[in-house]
Image 1: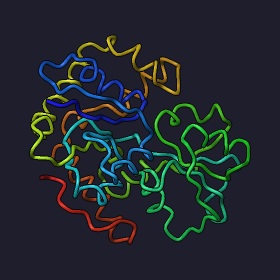
Image 2: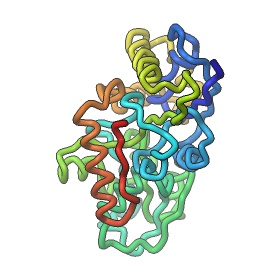
Image 3: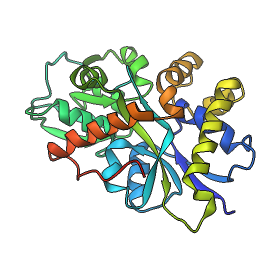
Image 4: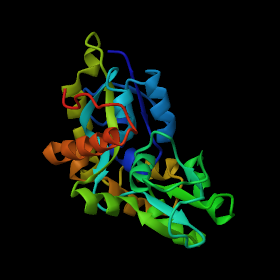
Length: 276
């Protein structure tokens, strides 16, 4: 079998999940060539079909399901883990604000647009994730949309949360928050891309990570932007959960709710089937 091109972020939740697979610890799993990239990069690259297996934003699915299928494991979906809109000036809304976001097709930005319906920001600028909080602190932006470990570190920048978009989403819909999805290329001629086998491999990698948490520690620290081990542990505890192993009925329903609402609001194309 040929090696699979696999792309995911350098964030602790992804390196925790994929450590065992990418280090040859899962018997008979396909070999991989790994690319580490922020989700805005993988969203765009996946439109060009650049990877075999890839972590993307759930918000990008309507543009990708013709080439890829959604795997029911390995991603980020949960409760209490939503994006935050941060400010330095205590403003009450985004009217007239210069806003930094981590990507146009990120789930975070889609949630912000749904929440901010009727508000009128002065500008939206896509900014590398690591530059958002420093940019808001320095006054380059009036507000910043952040994800991942920023939930734990934003007070260090003297910033305040204007809204917790996950809390807003959960209270508005009752659903969990769909953040990042794992997709596999549709290619029946390559047995290494069999979705059932890939699902088994990823679940085995998750199980190995939980069973041997210290085995991946150096790998996680090597790639993490935030080097504090406690922040890394908090990050993993928040974003790796039962949905990482199996989306289940609840997970699929949350995805369909998010993208159905977004389509009704005119923000994304109609979503095709996510269950085939």
